[in-house]
Length: 436
Image (tube, rainbow, N blue to C red; front, side, top):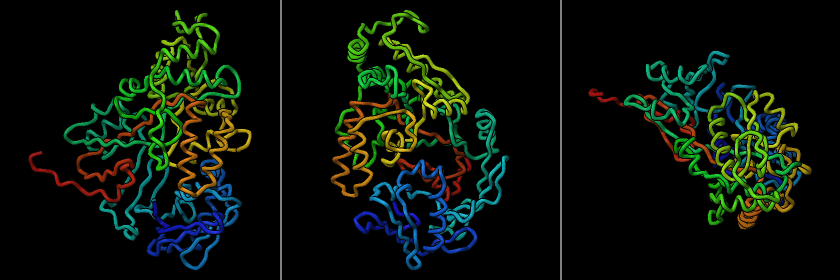
């Protein structure tokens, strides 16, 4: 979608992307957005290691240069179809001078204060100031919201939605580009078996998890790819809940019947036993783990989980010292998200710390990365969907929602599929009836 660039076109057989900038954009310090200022900002963003890890196409960029006042030329070492999607990077001068509807006037550990930028290119916001504060507990944040001390709580857990909602507080939910997954270490051990991984996916009742744990705030997931991508083939059936087939596959793979466990710890007759890591202080992940554990138990699988501090959790995964890990993993909206996690770890330096290797998936990822032809993208994505179902790198549980609670003093601009916080510059004060 066009934002600061109003249009773009591929040149030089896909090795140059020409961006045409809008002519009416100002940075918060009054500097106009020109090709030269955009180039400076892009070059700084491309050099940052975190950006290069998250946006795979940046590694293909050989130069960024201005042409005239409005055109930016991005030259590549090879065609890189993910580049336009990856250019969601914000343009900034220095560290905090951006082009958005609000500008930072204060930022420290206590709070961040944003003031309205009257010269925002899409129009001046009606809200004059946004103050962001962190609370030690959600209960404290809810109490402050109900008292009217704050206007919004941005991340209401599913079980608290009905508690927070009342005549003075409105609730809005949106689908995130994240999904809950149990990612496997595919390098070694029993979970290196594609058949075992298929069996585990078939043992999961996703609808029940969404109802019981997520309180209806989610959508079943059966794969690594964003299902709302324009080339995604929704006619390909994903995993359904088939415990009998799951037991049969486990039986075939392990050489014995997948009988029910007599206990959840150390039972000698488990068809499969593994440990799943969970980051500490995420209650939703702990509840998910308990439900997944129960469902796997019913097909003879003993999944134990180990709760670790965040630093140790991340270290164990990055070093490959795990069998499985429960994650809230970014997986959309672009194909580049799946690419950085599930491409070959032997051929790609990215975020694939899970050891997943599949030669056909690797071939399809390469086609998707380099092809700007719509037909080739649709065909390759169709094939990749089927490969990832046949050889799943994880148990894909559910795409999750995020819920915001906002005082009814504001009219929210709610665009389907988008975080309403990003439309806050279009919110308006509500006219409250005298009878309320």
